[in-house]
Image (cartoon, rainbow over all chains, first blue to last red; front, side, top):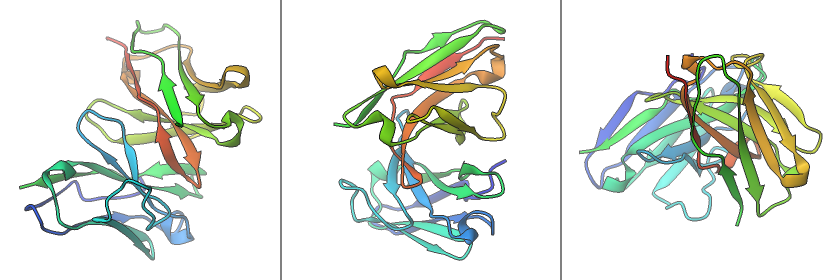
Length: 111
Length: 117
């Protein structure tokens, strides 16, 4: 049972903008811990997409952006492309569990 | 180039022991923690725990405490994940990853562990 909740699926047409939410609580995101986002293309290793709420590693297109507010984080993908079809996971730290935690995952489909 | 290279896939019988490895290169191994992440077939990512290579101190997720053992060998920049008695429910892909600023910035290639029932 993950403590970070994401929508199971999100879809959009090429070129559209989509957002993925990551809802936590007062013991993780709400406690001030950062939100990080990972992309896992089918059959591949996860890679970090956004770290520390809104920072992009080098090589990640600026179509991807992240934000955090209260007990939630959010990932936005603008100018959706076919290659963005993947599973996306948020991650934070939970002080009650003394553990890093992942979100439930969101499958993005490009229509 | 920073890399984490994991040992190959393994098929084991229930009750057998197993140790998988994660060899780091391209950076100072003792500077950053190594985490282990499990992915059950068709499921999401689960954080298993992390180990500090500088002092070999592990911190396990409550869900995995007592079920696995994490260790390192600093002399060869390698982290290990070990089971003493495998179960079919341990069938999964296991990733190691480097921990930087509370996130996992470099991931290993993954090790598939299969324990047929």
